[in-house]
Amino acid sequence: MNALEPLLPILQTLEPLGLPAAALQGWYAYANQKQAARLARHLDHELKLVHQELSTRVNHAYLRSDAFQANVVQAVRAAEMAESEDKLRFIARSLAGCILSFPPPQLDKFQTMRIIESLSDRELRVFAEYFQLLDPIDPYQDFIPADSQVSIPGLSKQEFIAALLGLEQLGLLTKENISDRDGEWTATPSHSGQGFAWKLTALARQIATLSRLRGEEP
Image (tube, rainbow, N blue to C red; front, side):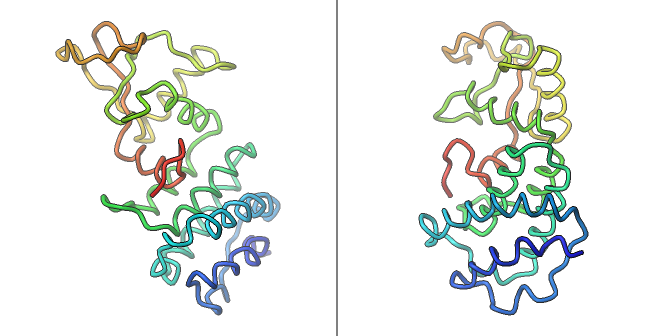
C-alpha cells in the first residue's frame, strides 16, 4: 500500500501556497502506513501553523520542485523508525520547515532530513535539552566541558554520554581542545577548567533552524 495516502489530503492544503494541483498524482512510498498516519496528524498541525503564521515565508519554487516530493518520502521513512510521538512531531515540524525560505547560508534540506531520520529518540531528547544548557543569545559559540557534571533528568550519566557520542557521530556535536583558550569561558558554572569541550556544529544549526528549535524563525 502507498504509505503516503494518509498525508495526501493534508499536503493538498498547500495548493493555495503554490503546490500544483496535479503534483501529488503518482506520489508513492513504501513504508509503514500506520506510522505514516501518526506522522500525518502532527503534519496537519504544523502546516496549519504555516498557513496562519508563516505563509509569507513559503518557498513557492521549492513546493513546485521534485525536492519537495523527495523530502516528503524521506519524512515518511523517518517516521517508520520513530519510537515516540516527540520524534514524529519533530519530523513533521522539520518537514513543514522545508517549505519555508531561510536567510543565508543555504540549508541543505535533504541532508538535514537524512540526519533527523538517523536520530534516536534519546539522541533527539539530549540534542533538544543541550540547547537549554548553552548561552541563549548564541548557543553556537558556547560550549560545555566534556568532563563537566552536566546531565539530563531521567538519564544516567552513561546514557547521557552515549547520546553525546551518538550526536558526535552524526556530525551534530564536535569535541574541541580548549586547553589554550584560557579566559574565554563564560560565567556559566559548568564552564570551568581546561581540556575538551562539546560544541554544536554547522549541521546542528541546520537542524535547529529547519525544526525551529528554541523558537528560531527563518
